[in-house]
Length: 185
Image 1 (cartoon, helix red, strand yellow):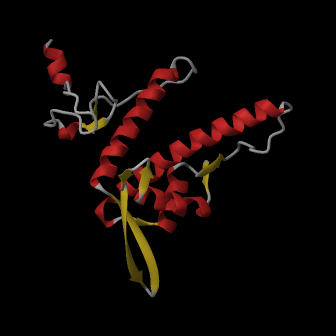
Image 2: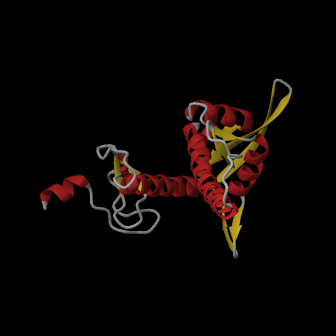
Image 3: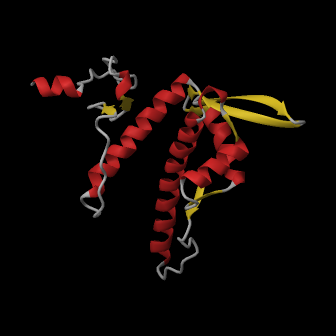
């Protein structure tokens, strides 16, 4: 998915073969997960009208300040996978696509499904809470906009505060405690 971070040389010489292999695998796994979150978020940003591949690549480049590198050849297989994800008999469609012809050019637009919205909310919340949790260990600071979001106390799904009438997490079913309820304790 994301092939590298700009300014980070993936061909850096690391003397120990075992160190190099471990680091390559770790970075690849991490970038693959972050890449999925980024792609889903960009698709969500375009709403129901969706976004086509080239625009998604452009937005990705712009929104990451040209720091994350994604190759076109890895984007389209990822999009197919998000459209028809399957593992051990479990199926999920996080995005849907439709084709249109604009100015004699065929384009395939992608938009989030309802399930995709739920999964993205969970992934964002999990990732943000993970960064917040490790920030003290790694000498950086994460400040979450608590007035804008509610985080499920069980699974860390991120819920827009404008949806404050939601009583239960859509992912795990946990009863949500809203900030105003917390303050009454």
